[in-house]
Structures are given as C-alpha cells and as structure tokens.
Length: 235
Ligand SMILES: [Zn+2]
Ligand SMILES: [Zn+2]
Image (cartoon, rainbow, N blue to C red; front, top):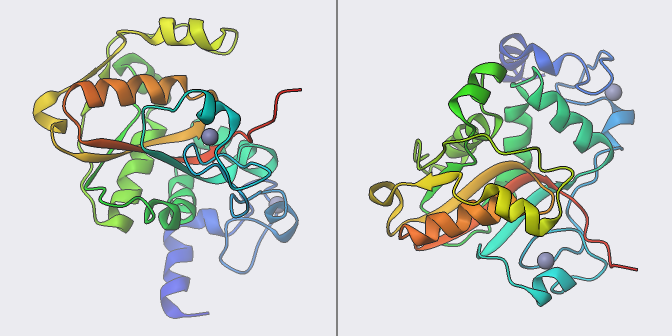
C-alpha cells in the first residue's frame, strides 16, 4: 500500500470498516466486497435529461411529457439497495460519506458543460442545527475541491419548514414548497450552476429551487445527486 494511502487510512478511519455492514476491510475502500455488489451505478442507460436509469438511453416519459426546468441532471447511483442505505447513514450521523459520494459523482459532474459554480439544497437554520450539518452543503464543498469550482454559500435559503413531502402528490408537493426557498440575485445572476442534493426522487424540491435560481438570473442550472430513483414505465 502506498504511503499516502496509509496516511489516508489514519486520517479517515471510515475506510477501515465497511460503511454498510461494519465488517473490517483491508483494501482502503469504503465497502466490503459483498456490500459493494448492492450499490447499483448509473453507468447503463439513463434519460439524457433527468439522468434516471431507464431501459433505453432516450428521453423518459416524464421528461417527454414535461421538460424539467434544469438543463440536465446526473446521479451516480440508483436509489435502491446499498446506495439507499448509505444515503440514510449520510443523513444520520455519518457525514464522512461525503468523500465517498463526491468521488462517485465527480465523473458525472464533469459532463456538465460550462458549469462555473456550485450551490446546494438548503435546510432551515433550525433543521440544520438539529442535524448538525446540511448533507447537501458538505457534499457540495467536497465536490468543489474535486471540480475546482466555487460553492456559492447561501445562494438559496430555506426560510420556513415545509410539511413532510412523503404523503403528498406531485402537485401538492409543488404547492407545499412554493415560496419556501429564496435565491439571491447578486449571488446567482449570470452563473451556470450545479445544484447539489443527496437524492432525486420526484424532483419537486430540485425543480422549485431551479425555477427560483432561474428567476433570479442564473444562466443555467444543472442538478447533481448521489442517487436517483429509477424511471419506471407506468403500468
Ligand atoms: Zn459490508
Ligand atoms: Zn427523464
């Protein structure tokens, strides 16, 4: 093992045990061999706009039906199995996973032509205090180091807490989110921004923030997430 890698192990003890099952690992990775198999990478067919896994690499029915406001979205993995478990840990006491996720997201982000800055999905101050960190913000900072693009701090803020989105329909989600995010023109005007979040599910939050960024003069908005739900053709 190279000296630098050994130093990394001492500095980052998360690379000594598997981040899913806790088993000891010896190759300096993040996952044991078994758990690594449960992470599905988005390296096969994806929709060229929303980046979700699809059966064929063509526009998915949702994007065909209604184009999202962002120019293009990319995600490193499918939100299922190992990736879903890792994201849950990331949000509940394992902020160090930002390094693993940024590593996975970097090549996807490099495909976003002309991007010149990064911003992240905000949390309310209260929610951030409760968790101790905003997972999208720390992920954005980690990506910033790899992509050599600046993070625009507080480009968008979340002023009020919204109801849990889980039980709401897409239309109700959009209504629930309306007016809860504010972007600052002086920070975002003329910028080509990569908006970073942990996961893309319905896309309601990302779409609301994208519209707000564009309204405040952003030139274009890309979306980058660790994972996205697979596009499933409606039955
Ligand atoms: Zn494992
Ligand atoms: Zn799509």
